[in-house]
Image (cartoon, rainbow, N blue to C red; front, side, top):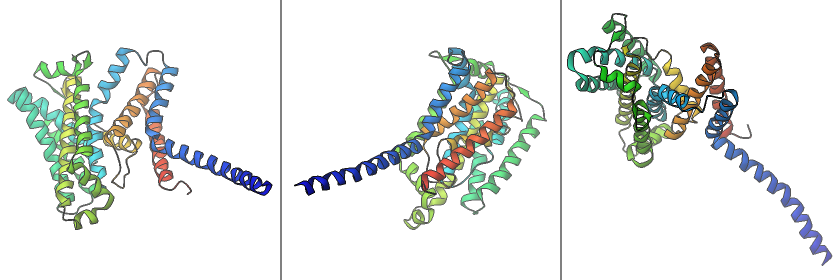
Amino acid sequence: MEQQQRGTKGTADVDRPAARRLHRESLVVLVLEYNTVLIFLAMLVLAASLSDVFFSRNNIFNLLRQVAGLAGMGLGMLLVILTAGIDLSVGSVAALASVMVAWLLGVLGLGPALVLTVAIGSLCGAVSGYLVAARNMAPFVATLAMMTIARGFAFIVSKGSPIIIADPRLNNFGSAYWLGVPAPVFVMVVIFGLVAFLLRYTVFGRIVTAIGSNEAAVRLAGVRTGWYKFAVYCISGAFCAIAGIISTSRTGVGSPIVGTGAELDAIAAVVIGGASLGGGKGTAFQTLLGVLILGIIGNIMNLMNIPGYPQQVVKGLIIICAVLLQGWRRNPEG
């Protein structure tokens, strides 16, 4: 009887350290899995502690209005990155759209100008998608070329000067409130809802994710992977055009320098959101959180009168930390 009790006690002593270790490992996995959410919450707490006006209604709405365009570019970038691609042309396509919508407003009117501008953005994406999907060109090279071409056309159309928009309705949209919320925020929500729906509930979204995970296996299953890769670049181009239109509506002019460096912010938002640059992993919700995190960083520093250059340093450090967390998640013991 005593030996049985000692044996039971010894087993319990062994199980307790194992249980504690399992608890610690579960906690680490939980932190790694939801690191984007934790970073977002930490940024909110930090912002509230550094500025009394951060959670004011005007500041929150201003923040959301500022990130609306970036959200569109980031969500388009997410679709491309899920296929193990990259789109370096997002900022330049937004600039071309900004110039084109301002120019077309004086020629065609508001409705046709908006439709044609989005079509032009999608066409830019289609060219990149064709080079990547049909000609097997490296996404980095194809979109780098499109980045240069689109920016060049933006300067050609505008002759290097901003174009003042001729229709006040577009300008009013940038500053308007719908149901007490800035109008551009509704566009951001619609794009987010569309991407989230595509990825979660459609065959298209599942195949896009599968291509990034194992394109060869998807191709052997009889799926035309090239068509899906072409499609995500078209969608990304359309979202960038919408981002350019939003920028024009906020500033009142179509400018060829819109979106300078936006490709880096879009990539940063996707990476901070936990997506893998190798493809096959990422969600619309976490990418949107990544966009908001970048917006909060800029907003805090603006409230504290810190110049823009340190913001780039902070963004770079956050990207490094996000990528390191991804590596640790894949190999916690490494």
